[in-house]
Length: 144
Length: 191
Image (cartoon, rainbow over all chains, first blue to last red; front, side):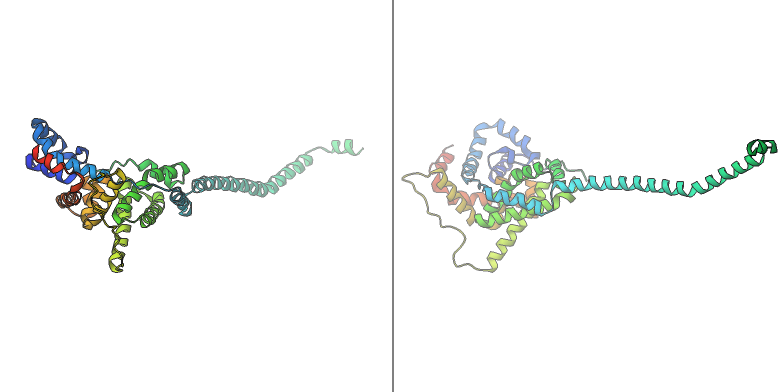
């Protein structure tokens, strides 16, 4: 790290100006301590830098026209930035979940359809067996 | 490598998601900086607008895939803006123009003094006459208020070299504008 002394302080003022916020952060405290110890000398060092800063600050900041602002905002849309993009992610999630539910429902229908004949056949067989186990008296009763 | 704290991180994330309010905020925050950078580097308002618009377009394209923690978004955007300015300055050198881009300096007006606007015009003219690298150093450190490390990194030079450019540039400006502060030299010497 650079040693802080009168020469370095002068270099800082000549390079960065009198506003200490522009000075390297690592050297700021040491520079301030040195300046505090010899106020008049530091003022002399900073005087010229302050004059140059004032001249630089006289340069007007360019104004942003409404036309330029509008063009730049429009360019964001042209570049594909829009809330729609964020919505698309959600829409895709909904679509996937929806597709999942639909697939589960279809699977249920198919399983049900394939199981039904077996169950019906079993029930019919049970009914026949039951009827065959009934006695002849019953047939007479029924047939008269 | 330590992660970089970026004040624009959240805004960039929202811009990347297409949040209209974030886009407006980004324009308010960055467009003036890009226009100021280009205006002072190029000295031409029309070219400066083109550069600022192109830099912002690249920001829109970058935002959705921006990976925070590696660099500050503002520094990245300055690099984009500077490269666009370099391209234009290079083209100017390749195609010699009949009239130089610098406006003539009208010189001092000691009798009536200088209004603030006139003063600004003279400062701008003096800035344009500086060697390119000295002007760039002053623009980045003084006007854009980047840190010395950020500015040196953008210019791909050491901090010592940056300080040398700054000192020489500021000295040249003082000499050009010396007549604006006739008492300055005397007061400085007296003090």
